[in-house]
Amino acid sequence: MKKLFDITVPASTANVGPGFDSIGIALGRFLNIEVYEHDSVSCEADGDYLTGIPTDESNLIFQTAFDVAKQYHKDLPACHLKLKSNIPLTRGLGSSASAIVGGILLANELCHLNLGLDEQLSIATSMEGHMDNVGASIYGGLVIGTYIDEKAYIQHSTINNVSVIAIIPTYELETKHARNILPKKIPHKDAILSSSFSNLLVAALLSENWKLAGDMMKRDLFHEPYRSKIVKELEILKKHKLPQYVYGHVLSGAGPTILAFVDKEYCQNAKEFFENLFPNYEVSEITVENTGAKIEHSIHVK
Image (tube, rainbow, N blue to C red; front, top):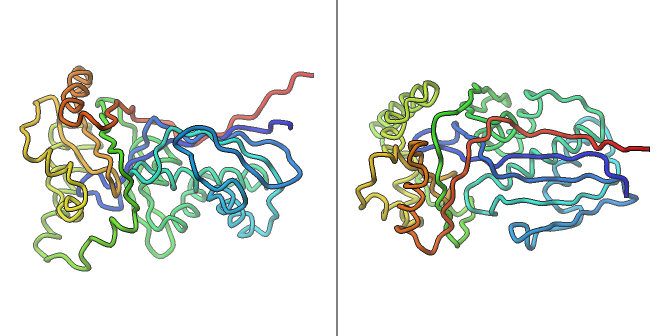
């Protein structure tokens, strides 16, 4: 099979505390898609993180690519995909968003659509329902935005002065279940208060004032108080006095992964602290990825 190109899509975290459905950060774990010429649509998956995913046309990458091609009145050419990923499924690190973004790039390249980042974001957001995960995977770094009247609005920035420790439980948590546990309404005073925390969080993130950002992260009233009923690790962290080099922690997306934002000089200390607190979990540093999804073409030497 002739290799055509590679697609690389970063993982992402969403919400970041009170930034519910509107703040996303790209992370240094990746979905890698090798694209080959082929006479039929097929794919193969390599690695434990992709165990059990569909390898036919029902794969989310293909489904997305078919939908995008159809929107632009194109037929997606047959191809074979080789997939690798170190993004755990259903753990709150944007695995489905990375597949959607990968599918958009696949259609964009094979069908010669020439879609810009804003068009990719609009398509991805309409599929995902909110722009935080897909926006981060497309643009990289920090994204803040919303989706209203079928239009995505986004502010993009980089993050350079913090380390991130991921606490990844062994169990999975479907986004649908985590969504269903949220109330239909919250008190008006709580909405105002949590909105003020979110506003201050945005200002702190854009200026990389991590002490202030960490303080605002822990004050969310939109989702974490409700999801702590099914993600017990949040309650464990609240009961412990955290070291000063830990600025704050958040439930990553719908969970159950928790991300701690820590002083870069004390990253190893933070990792050891959380390993002692959660000895049976995967605890690792995950870098912020300031480069978004990309395509690299193969070079064929004659």
